[in-house]
Length: 311
Image (cartoon, rainbow, N blue to C red; front, side, top):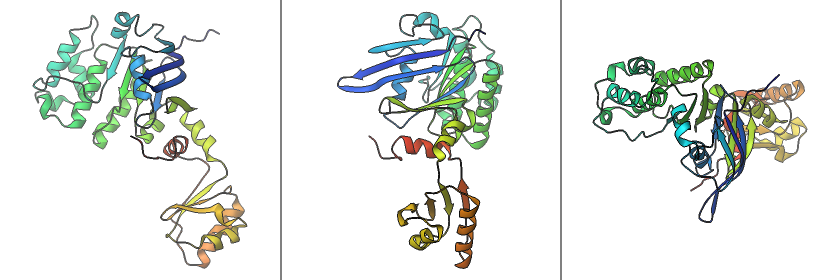
């Protein structure tokens, strides 16, 4: 059975800015019709990677193919087939949403209906409001509609729900899923790990210009779980006494954050029962108990240095 050609294929991508190696040998593949998350802390190299895929940056080394084309050499052929959603679209501030959509539609031979797109992103009530008077979330929705006006085969979504209220966020999530069902490939960058966890078929986490983890969200969360049990309770528990009751060394029971405890042992029935009895005997309320899977946010923090500060 023949495998479909990848929508994106990157091998050994390297990009320097002066002495700084912003991208350090990244390789990845995105399949057609896939929602692929490119995640990373600020300064990790994901923006440079995406800009290279879009044809705005020329690689210093490695190969890049997007829809089978070189984004730089074949830019004029590639651009009509992709949509790019930016956090700040750079629109004329006096233009209205429907006017902007009609303007962008005029650039394409087979543009989508501006009226339909306006309704799709929930901006009908704001169609006559000039851009500078739109809220941040409304601007994001307009940027998303503009990204889709050319009926792209591949879209790049940069922080697509930044500034949106919960209703608009849910609408955008539904739209991303609809794009996937229509066979459109989506590359998503976001700092909202719950968004990546819910929407992405696969993700790649980038740090210091390299891919440090990749796979489906489920695979990454399962792989990171290990033999660890987490629970919440009032802060300041006697960790030495608890460790002794569980048959563990003192340093195997930690309180990394106030009221949040980590036990370096699998949540077996015996361990859970012993923990529950120990808390009961001291009249201590158990807030919650977590075992098995970690969230994607926990995986992200672990593989990128536990959220250490960056420039």
